[in-house]
Amino acid sequence: MELKRLGMAQRYSEAAIYNGVAYLAGQVPETTFDEDIIAQTREVLGLIDKLLAECGSDKTRILMCQIFIADLADFDGMNSVWDAWVAPGFAPPRATVQAPLANPKYRLEIVITAALQ
Image (cartoon, rainbow, N blue to C red; front, side, top):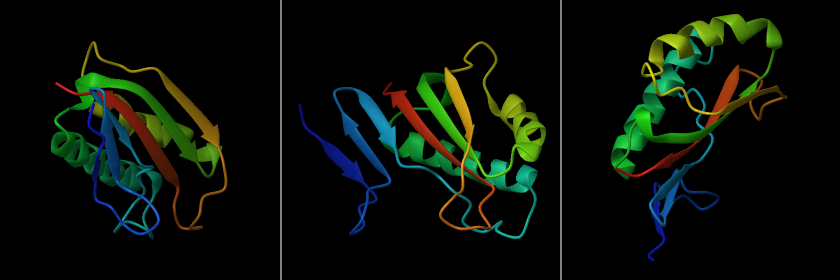
């Protein structure tokens, strides 16, 4: 089995693919730092869609999702975007926890593991 890495930087890779599974790094907002949880969640889920496609997968193949949210007051707003994004019949196992994030402007970070197609 070959281990493949995508988007390698000195410190981390955006994704690793091994044994038919894609492991995505935590995805955070890139352009919506000063916007609300709705905008940040939309952006992050869009980044996940693009990265999953690059890996050869999509949101219907998610095996596990971990969401780190800076403020639980944003939970309902995040879920409103999440619920519209998740493909009907394909809601993955998910954990959501409150945690301080690396940049205080980040409202969330999402980590995805997905099967390849």
